[in-house]
Image (tube, rainbow, N blue to C red; front, side, top):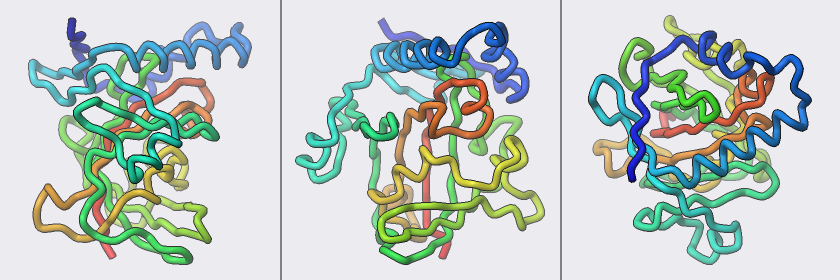
Length: 230
């Protein structure tokens, strides 16, 4: 049976407080074990995220595949089977909804990329942050992404009048490592239609997450819609 999670757009401080409550007496090994169980449960749950009666995002039961299977499928994930590839080194899961119709970020190339996103706290069953709609609506996140011989890095652009929502919330200008995992597989460029815009879904463990997730040891689910700016 499909499980609907009714969400309210809570302040991040509140959501983190719920996750971290009672963790002072919990060892890091126990916190990681709890995180692993939360991710395993999330993969198996038929989940739809609902707010004010509207379905924000249908996730469904997830079918994990190996990196070898992913490569053999020309670095794609089967949407009909709701496949997510798991990267062994980082523990990040990724589903490519659309690769986009721009160009890949080449070696030794830097590019400015914009993103609309949902951030969902898997352990706390709460939508923490979004610049798509609701009380957190803002300008798209603008990121400066570099590909240094196949190693991706990036920073959020904090120079605009509104600044970066991620930076203003978490205090770090470094692009979330789990987001960077998707960059080698997406074609990014200015688009005139939604069909040409890259879209990816990620399950990001705390070790690859934003600073609050890293500190409090919880995983997040993200949906990102990404376009090239220049």
